[in-house]
Picture 1 (cartoon, rainbow, N blue to C red):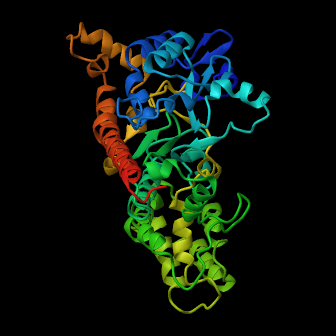
Picture 2: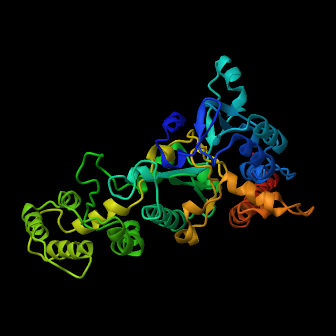
Picture 3: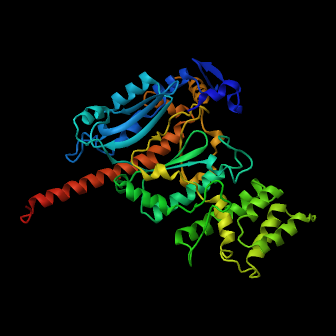
Length: 450
């Protein structure tokens, strides 16, 4: 976290910032508010339940050491990092969070031994400290789309470019469920400029690094670097069914009905030249450039007109250059297809920010996103620390059986987390645990067992 940039108010949302210590923070993010948030609103018990995956119960198959081998990492004020924290019960976790008041909480893998004791194991000479389990995770950041969005850049995000994140959720979520058979998937707003995905099925958590890399590569279509004019190359005699489905069900419609207009992709010469560079036939690009440089009045939007001209030219059969056949699809993929941080997904030992943290640059809570209604998600309407405490103050005294968050706009996100993700996940964990236990009992009773 580089909070020093805010000293000069270089980011709009930090202009009204206030100093705490030697760090300038936005008015939405207040250390005293954060302490109250952890004391009253942070769903610590739910988070611990999730991380336990049913191993905190009384079933004889429970692994009592399981949650104590999970790494938690705290980032404190002034970028002080506390790696390899571990907790054996929810009281320990809750007390540590309240005491240390972390600006960020990251979650790492489950290790073979307690991560808090890793140095002792290292000194023993035995290489026993290794990650053994971890959710399959995905990290998508809108800054990686800066070459295809013109409304914002860097950490800035608005309602014109946020739909790129919505498209990413739709494409990845559908594939994870339909192509890989995963069920327990949590999407979370990062608090500022992106989304995180946690795939929590048992078979996902137990994937090796090699298997994780294979899943990540399944989603990979970007081959070029930031200096390449052509970042997507759809080769082969036929597109993979996953890419066909993504294109026909999500990407094409989004590009033509929303992105084309919201980003004015063909509106200026430098913008349409970037697209012409993706076309492998100089004669075709010359024809299109000639049409676009000759300004003709039209009642239709210029972006729509030029896109239709490009499609008609490339699909007319007039030009025969190799690679021209899929050029229209490649352009759409270049602008709309999810841009994953591949390294985060490939390795077990990557940290990922915990849900319900508060982003220190915005003061917004990292709330879950419903993938079935992700079109309705508005990052500018996500609750902030100051908003939550205004709501608490207005709410008056609470009933004995009422949670504090039920009186705030955090109530709905926590309710969704519980009912749509946590409860089905824990039910599945219990069933898997029972099935495994019965199978081992049967094997032990079998006369053929050795």
